[in-house]
Length: 404
Image (cartoon, rainbow, N blue to C red):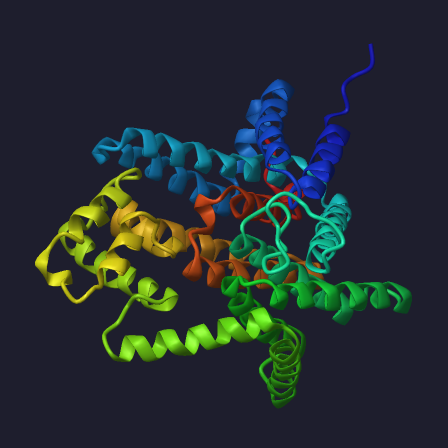
């Protein structure tokens, strides 16, 4: 009987996983279940334990996951707590990919992710130009498979990923022309949609990418300014949606000057104010499941009389639009320190391949900036995007991990 080739099973499973990631919730659920299951069936637990034990990033992630689960002990909303713990289990995919995938497969998987994004883009443009209808996508928000804010993060990362490849020496002219065309279409779609989270993350990505390629210099500064000015000027003049969102942003800032927090940006600031006051009372957080309950209770206090009824209503019926605030509320100071330590370890990872190293930094910056606008790790698509790419970056050193 032939021995099962688990190396190939992991490769093809992760390859398909990367392709369907921008396209299917059901596909995501299937693979975040099946990959850990394959990991368990394969066995060889001693070797896997030694690999994980030898990796600071995986240890930091493990501590973060365990501590977040422990905060259920001081949660009262057990249903919400269990829902978030289930989402955190998506992060187990990182352990599987990091310790099982061979590094020669990394670029294949990133490329197939781009193919999945191309399919998504094709559908989105068809909706935008009213060539067809698709699910809940509209010409105003041509996001075919996920919420527009989440899709904007996907597009921002894809756009900078393509630009990073264009600037890389690994590809020939023909390949770079293909990447260039795809870059224009993805960036165009980013500014046709109404997701400001991805647009802001895109700005950060452009700046970091030029610094990585040209270091901190006059050249990188000028190139960043030229790229951003060209893209934003074009978007403002072509996209009515982008022009409208810019107008809303300016209006929100003017409202806040007058003490009105009813705009999109004003509500985000209001969440910061409320979180600051809650953390003073609960330095260890309120538990993984209680952040929405506690916000509701906090807003009943007289000190928030300057918030309009509309602002309070929105805040009582939605999550904080910020991943860092969610972690602070759930797990307090300890939780945010554990999370930031995990992020630091990722940014400090040693990857000899320059293109992949640059991509790891760019990805983290785009994702972290996105986390200021949305709780990306509470959402299936963006959480899985994080799990896939962090797993890929860690798998580069898979073969160097200690084996006993």
